[in-house]
Length: 186
Image (tube, rainbow, N blue to C red; front, side, top):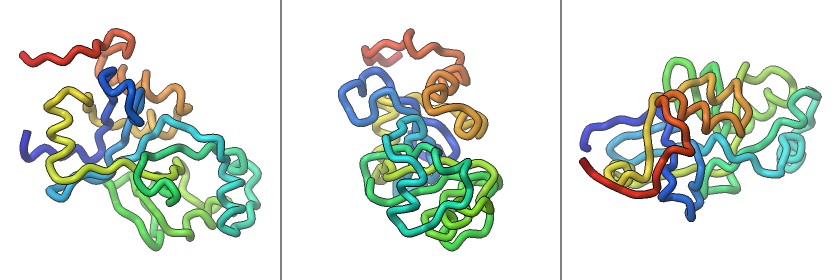
């Protein structure tokens, strides 16, 4: 499974991951290269709202619409750091360009823009990320831990967190309830 690039793909946790931190998750892969991979869980909201996060970092909120925006658990790595997945890419201080449409930003300037209604059109905000070392994600795919499917910005940005996993499964034409936790190879 060498030379696979999963950037801008969803990874959907198989039922075998039921007892892990990734149980019933959908992960958007922001970067995948020879050094490894970085992704964000896009369907696991936490109790923290954007207004609380902005208050914690000293940013006043002037946009009432973003106050109640949910924050997501992006993964188990650096879960005290914020990550903003957004469309369009824009020009922020610290942005990883995923593709022509989507960026991942970690700098405070994007949070300031969001708080004052000048941020990106569409966004998800997470605390933490999911990361894999070189070859690890390929090994996990070979072990049937994940399904992969090309990502849909509409699934990420236009649906609620609860709707994202079934919608991602529909991209494959599969119902999550029909998946087995038994591993097999043809």
